[in-house]
Length: 347
Image 1 (cartoon, helix red, strand yellow):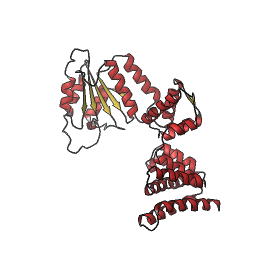
Image 2 (cartoon, helix red, strand yellow):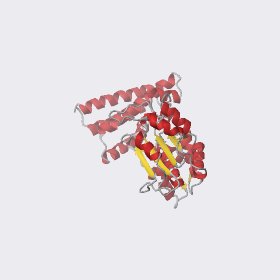
Image 3 (cartoon, rainbow, N blue to C red):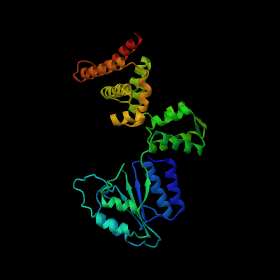
Image 4 (cartoon, rainbow, N blue to C red):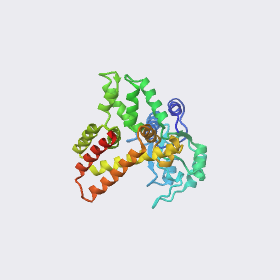
C-alpha cells in the first residue's frame, strides 16, 4: 500500500528536481494519479489542450510504434516534449480481444536509451504488472516508479488529518469517522466532499457530525446500513421513517430488500468467521470485500445474537419471494417486516 509521505516526497522531487526521461505511475488511486499528472504538466509548463509538445496515447486504440515515434521527436520551440501513455495493458497479463498487436521490442530498445528531451510517462492503473515480461523488466529498470496504489483505512485517515492541519476548519473525531464512512475511503470522493466542508467552514470553523450529515450525501447503501442498525436495535419508528423517505425519493422496495438482505448476509458471515478465529484481514480476503466494510460489520455484529440475524435473513428471503410472486403488496410487506422484527426484539 502507498505511504502518504512517499507520494508527497515524489511530488516534491517533480517540483524541485530535473524531470527524468521516463516515469511509471503504478496504481489504482485516481486522485493520486491526477496529482502526479498535474505536477508533471506544471513543471514542463505544457497546456494539454493545444501544446505541440504534448501527446497522450490510450493503448486501447494506439500502437507502440506511434508512441516511440513521438518520443523520438525533438521538441517544437521548447526544451522538452511530454508523452503520456494511458492504460498500457501490455505490461500486465491481461488479454485484450481485437487489440492492436504491440511491438514491445521497439519500446524496449527505446527505453534502453531514452531521449533526455522527452518525458515519457506510463499511467498503469493496475494493482500489479506481469514481472515476467521483458518490457516490464526494462521499464522498471529505466523508469522512475511512483506508487499510487489505493490507500488503506489508516493511510486515508492520515491523509485527511494532514490535509486538515493546513485547512481553516477543524473536525472532531466522530465527524471524521462519519466523513470517512460516507466517502467510502475513496480519496477522490473524500477530497471532493472536503471542498464543500471548507466552503462551509468560512462560516463555522468546527465541523461536527451534524454538519457532515447535512453536507455529505448518503448513497442508498449508506442509508440501508443505518436502516440495518435501526432494525436490529428495535428502533422501529426510525426504520419506517427512513423507508418512507427512500420510497419518496424513488427507490424500489425490491432493491431496498436486496441490499438489506446482503447486509444481513455480511453480518452473518462476519459473525461466523469471527467465531472460528478469523481477523479483519482474513475475513476481507475470504469474502473478497474492502477491509473497511469488514471493520464496520465486526463492530456491529458483536451487538447482536446470531439466532436473530438468521431469523431476519430467512424473513427477508421469504419476503422477497412473496413480493416477486405477487402474493403480497411490496411496501406493506416491508413495513410489516420492520414491525414484526421490533416485536421479536422486545420479546
